[in-house]
Length: 316
Ligand code: FAD
Image (cartoon, helix red, strand yellow):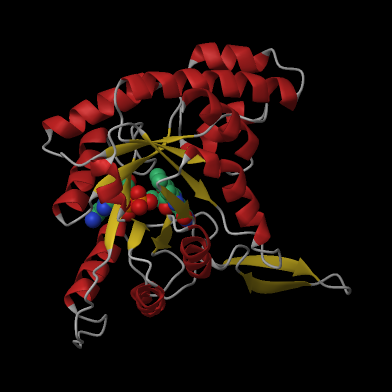
C-alpha cells in the first residue's frame, strides 16, 4: 500500500523509520538486522537513504595524492526492492538530484518501476562533499526540478523530451521540509513558499528534518496550514545517542537542542549517560506528538537503532 494510503487509513500514529544502505562491501544483512529488530512495532513503511559519490584524496606510497571518486553507500534501489520482497513492507527509496545526473535518475526510475517500488522521497541531496567541477547542466539544482522529472516520467515523458507509454502504476512521493528553516533559505517565508510549491506540484506528504523541540514543529505545521498546505507533515525523530551530538547535530542539521536537554547532556560523563538522556527526551517528545495525533513518527535510526527500539517499546 502507498505511504499516503497507509497514513490516511491509519487511525493511530503510524511507526516508520529510515535506514542507510550499508557501507560499500558490507552485507545487506546489516539492513535486515535493523528491520528484524524494529519489526515488532509494525512499521508501515521504511525509507532508504541515497548517497552521491564523493571525491577523496588517497595517499600513495610515494607520498603523492590520487583523487578518487567513491560512492560509500551504494545500493538504495536494490535494497528497497529486497525489503519489499522479504518483508512485504512498503519501501521508500530516497531519490536525490545532487550527484546523480538526470539520465541516471531516469534509469533508476525505470529500475524501480520494474521492481514494483512505487513510493519515493524526492530530495536535493547533501552538497557538502560534491565535486565542485561537475558539469552542472546534467544535474538538477532543486528538489522541485527533480519532482518535475518524476511527474513527467509518470506522464510518459523522458528527460530528452521523447515520449513512451506511461507506466500503469505511477510513482507517488513525499518531499522534505524544515521546521527550523533550511540552512540556505533566506527566511522561513521563502522556505514555506517552496514547501507549498512541492505540495502543489504533487507531493503527497512532507517529512521534517529532525527536531528536538515539539513547539517548533507545531508552530511550523500551523504556519504551513495557514499557507494552505494541507498534506500530512510527518515529524522526523532522532534520539540523541552520543555526548558530542550536543554540538554536532545543530551544526550538521541546524536543529536546536532545547536547554533542558542540552543541560542534561552537559552533565554526562559517558556516551552511555547521553544515550539514557536521549531516550528519555525522545520518549517524552513522542508521547506528546502522539497526543497531538501526528500521522506518523518517522525515526532516523542511524547509529540509534537500540534507542529507537527502547522508545518505540514505550510509546507504541
Ligand atoms: P530543496 O527543496 O531543493 O531546498 C533546498 C533549498 O533551496 C532550501 O533553502 C529551499 O528553500 C530552496 N528551494 C527549494 N526549491 C527551490 C526553487 N525551486 N528555487 C529556489 N530555491 C528553492 N540527503 C541526502 O543526500 N540523501 C538522503 O537520502 C537524504 N534524506 C533526507 C530525508 C529527509 C526527511 C530530510 C529532511 C533530508 C534528507 N537529506 C538527504 C538532506 C537533504 O538532501 C538536504 O537537507 C538538502 O540540503 C535539501 O534538500 P531538499 O530536498 O529540502 O532541497
